[in-house]
Amino acid sequence: MLVVSGVAFFVNVAMVMLTDLKMATSLLLLLFAAFMGLRASKMFGQRRSVQALELAHMLYYRSTSNNSELLSALALRAQDEHVKEALLAHSFLARRPPGAQGPPEETSQWLQSEVENWLLAQSGCEVAFDGTRALGHLQSLTPSMGKYPPPGFPKLDPSATVTSPEAAPSSDNP
Image (cartoon, rainbow, N blue to C red; front, side, top):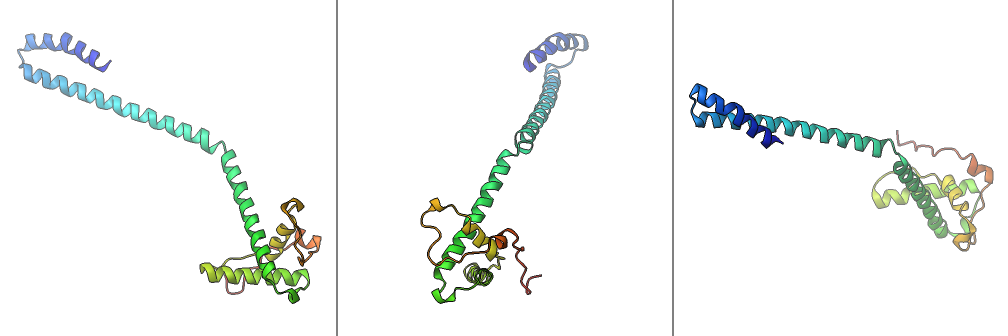
């Protein structure tokens, strides 16, 4: 389309101007090339603007407004965190000496301090671990996961897992 309109312009207007004004052919060709270049650059800019607008429209309406993937990823991440807490609780309770059994509150405090110290030693990062919540996650696992609860697993008061306080920040953390 661009070439056809350029040729039509050149044939109709330029040839008439050439004969009437006695202009040099090279100057006329130079003006024709400049005109075609200007028109091509404007069309390129318009096409680029249209494509950018279509891309923005697609990204907004297919990604941002449809948050099902985001919500799914968030739910999976939350499940992963619950599983990690339950695994840490199970592994540390399995390492606990048999004579160190006590009330559930002491067990959750012991678990919290042991896991936080281990994570600090392994990664160098201070992590707030909620022992009561981890024990609650571990107890809420279904019996279909194998032999559950393991022998010697401390029983928690059901009301303690429902109304468990948030992990209190340690005194050395602001």
